[in-house]
Image (cartoon, rainbow over all chains, first blue to last red):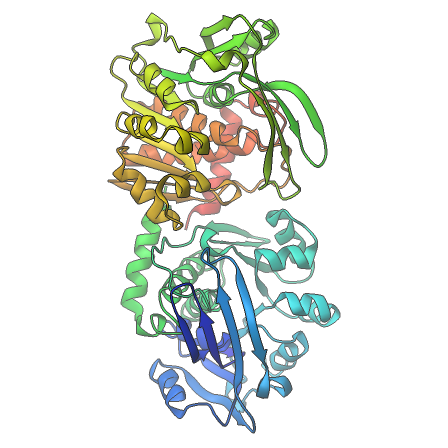
Length: 299
Length: 299
């Protein structure tokens, strides 16, 4: 079934203990779509500036992504800079230049409006909702968010949560959204805000999904050489939603398998800068690693 | 098959954000044995002072623990004090009074020397080895250790590691022992030091086991009301070793199931102070929760 992603296309400057890379292709919708591409043909809605390289659009299209919804606006492309400490868990944002994304007014093209699976990448919840309301009758909608919106746009976020099927967030965001330290209780409280499902990401410690009819927990894939964790969460969402769209089901066993595929795609993402590793992975690589991970978690 | 535990019996003073409890029954061998009791009849070797309550020995025996190897020495029982911060992850040791444990010279009673499964709870590695060498031909030996011994008794610890089948340690200890931040690589390096298996505990994030023929990872059981995490690691080891002793096997599928039982017993432990919750749990409770956890991790 069809899959739509709405979010950022960006140029990131990432610094790790080993290396610094400037202006490399990134953005939530980019990571999501590249991760979902082995499963589905993701439709992309976002905005870039005049400086966005044509070659980068071609690169995304060659991954199997439909870029017809990427608008080119006057101005510069969204830019973000971050630095990771040696433990990978501490990330400092060095700069955020919203540029054309500041006035992003999402326009879902006519031929995208029948999309069945929809991912609302991290953005102001009003923008997310505005995009979602242009989709006719989605089967399953997943939203991401961040601390900033929990802090400054809570009413809009609460409204959004009444319109989506799932919310994906990390441990820190879950605690901030609910005021609960215990992650199980935090997840339970998120469910009280509207979504039928919550996916709680814990980085190197894996992720769990909770909902009325499902509770499933999975450790991360054991990656020994992390290069750059940027985009891991969006890649997780991409593998997760890509698999669901391919299968055309949100039954509990589909959701469990989707968690496995999300975990696997995130593990590829962190093995390279930008989409370097992720974009090289076909369905065969994904299945191979999914099978490895299965053997690690099967009793 | 028979199961032997060598370690501390203690009186702990534990302070959490909610409550403070003084001089409550604790110690590594106590937690281990109580956790193992639903599976096997653990044999206990340790030392207590003249102040150790007879009622506490009776309490352990009523759990099904063989206390014939508990020596009573002149002096006071080992005492430890700790305080947990609100996040549970930060524990401050407020005091350690070794008392009779300072000169602990382990004596494995004659009728314990045929023990098949042996747990060497955290102690000076020379003491652990001395105890182990009194056991005739153990099938499977698991050792615990701590930062202190990695720091001050490394040669003795290295010697011990050449004599045990498995080492159980937490993330921080694994990093300290190997100098590796990445936990997968740290575990691989531990295997290079001698043991056939390493179990790496990550608290609320679960645990994984690694060895030549096995790699198995499991999230923690989702406990919503943590009361006191003291003893969780030893309880994990108790459920793990208890199950192996009951089954009389260390085949890969037994080790996987043992990780499940270790996780479950640890989850009971943290639900109460001391052995309050753990000692109330019979095999039926364990099976019930094991079945819950299975459903949470099964794809």
